[in-house]
Each structure stands twice: as structure tokens, then as C-alpha cells.
Image (cartoon, rainbow, N blue to C red; front, side, top):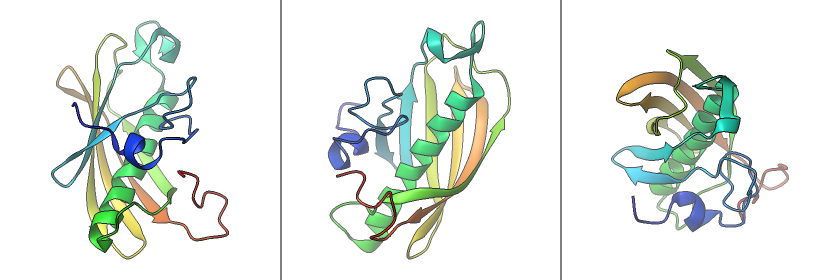
Amino acid sequence: MSQSSVQEMYAPTSICFGCGPTNNEGLRIASHRIEGGLQMEFTPEEHHQAFPGMVNGGIIGTLLDCHGNWTAAIALMDAQGADEPPCTVTARYEVNLRRPTPLGEKLTVVGLAKEVSSDRVLVELTMTAAGKICATGNGLFVAVKEGHPAYHRWS
């Protein structure tokens, strides 16, 4: 994936642990457009382990949460014909850990916008490693307005 990620395009100074391009201690995910949503790839490192050779569930949850949030923001931007995405936050999300996630594999996360309304999006998420589904999930992500602590956090 050679084009810039949505994080680099719309939130280049973000400090978010999961998706902030400027957080050198974070995961720095890079989500890219696909039909109906976004896709990202992530290669976990030694310090992302829960036990030898397996990725920590909290790291998996963060990958799905941040990627789902960006899937929603881009879906709202597209639905509204806007030039930049609204600032969205997680209202709820669920992660189903389907099998242990191996450390030595590249992880692929796909987020698909399933229901888009004026200010919220329901996103379906799937994470695979070596072609096997390791985690699935879904989340509800909501655009926030001025006065919310996260408003304009991406600028």
C-alpha cells in the first residue's frame, strides 16, 4: 500500500496511542481505503506479547478500535461529501478473540461500514494472520461536536 494512510492525510499530528502518526511509543497504524471501508496491516513486535509467541488481547482490541474509528470517520466524510472527516469517538465496540494471534505474522485488519447515519456508523471488523481469522468485532462510532474533549483532536 503505497498511498498515504488516512491518518497521515487527516491527522498528521495526532498523538493517539493506536493511530497517532506522531506517537513514537504507539502502534501508529496506517489505514487505507478499500471498497466499502478501510484496510490496514500491522506487524506486532516482541513487546506486544501476552505470552511467548502470541499477541496481547489489549493490543488486538486497540488495533480494531482505532481502525474501526477511522473506518467510521471516512464513511461519514464520504456520505456527507466533506473534504475532511468529522472527529469521531468510540461509543462501544466488541472484540471476539477467535484464536491465538501469532507474533511472527503480519496482521491484516479490514473495517467495513455497515450502517451509516448522519452522525454515527456501525463498523464490522475482521483481523487475520496468515490467512486465518484471529479476531472479529464490531463497533459504533459517533461524530462529536464542539465542546467534547476529543473535538478537533486530529488537527
